[in-house]
Length: 121
Image (tube, rainbow, N blue to C red):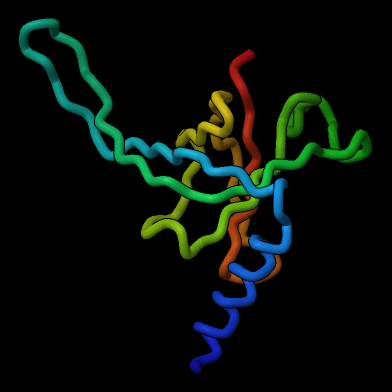
């Protein structure tokens, strides 16, 4: 087994061990725009992927009311679940709540993304 496969297996094992913390989510990313000549409007086209995520809150110490707001969440995403790099402006829906991706960081390894999610509420 290659090192890459071994690490991906460990990430999957970690997600499995998290049990009820792991949620199935829908990741949506804008892939382009189409101009509608009838309505004279641009319509965004999107691609979606079903992913498993762990959603956690920021600590009171991390919330600065500028870059991290009180209702922002950390979304941990297994990089193996997607074939693209998450980007700010994408969205992820977890248990009926849609979060806009504000920032993206690689987690402790290149196999996990740590996203900052923000609701419009």
